[in-house]
Length: 371
Image (tube, rainbow, N blue to C red; front, side, top):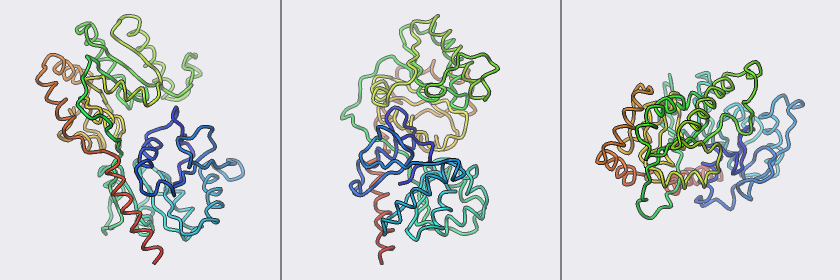
């Protein structure tokens, strides 16, 4: 498995891609044979991780550099199934250097990635990949836009997490937001709704977990906040600090590791995922469902595929609609319990079952290659 250069395969810095790969490895029948390759890190999630040294200047880019080092290693290992994540440009590079079977996973919009923006590029991948995986039907439809032919090697493989709970958890009066503090994730809508909710429901606790950028200092003059993310981040943090000072039932936890996030989800009655961008298959609502939490989200991207008959979907979301939905859940116990039951009973994204399907595809590729 070859990770994009930006992926950090460590507990404290792992994104959804790294966490999904880590979770799936534990249940794969090939777990003893799989090796994960990526940038040099100190404490990888698993022992089968291999760090690759890169030279961005000599190789004209970090991802090409990591691919070149990967090819050198690969030349020593024949009959190997290659799996690339989220970098179609690396697929095009590696397939020109290796005769091994190659699969590629799309976690994001292929129409916005170098190497798959053009119809001809996507058709080349479909024709030459042993398997192409998509984290949602939403992403698959993006990839196959304007295709005149159907391909049997295109597969939907949702992100997943294993539910470890044996029985429905007892919930506290907690409402939770987890994610990067950027406007696309809808955090500003949540904070705006909280301005009205916090004084009305002092017995409920409202949480925000996340950062704008890991380790980044936003306490700078506006002149130094060059990107939109930086500028939005400063506004978001000002709002968070104001709520923290004025309301005892508001709690900002910044960054906490995933195990603590899972504990918080188990305790919380409601998880808010107010995305305003086309999120392909976010892991956060899946984690919420796995922990028997009511998930309130939007109809953007692949989210409806996750929450169908399990969670609450708000169309054309704004802060007023979010306020009304949370207000209804708090005031109407029957309404809240209805979705707590649906979340618990209808969860079907256990990663151990998803990996069985992926391993079957892998087995067929390996058999075909060896024959």
